[in-house]
Image (spheres, helix red, strand yellow):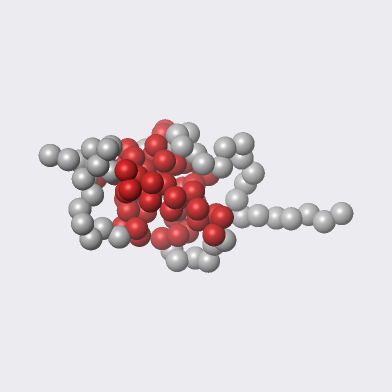
Length: 102
């Protein structure tokens, strides 16, 4: 019998903030992660950045993906009660708070 260990616990929902906060933190630390592990965090950032006009989010030109991930991580750390939400919803809330349209 072979057992495989992972640094991430198995969860029913791998896309909620509880599962993704650690992954997003690791991305900021430039740790080597498998592309699959990075996918949900970076994917949420890309999805919201791409849809920002329709979502009434005004991300300034020149903001990098790493800066956006940092905003997302700061939001998740500041709102632990919301970590049950999907990572995309968390990103949308974080970016609306950081870069509201005026």
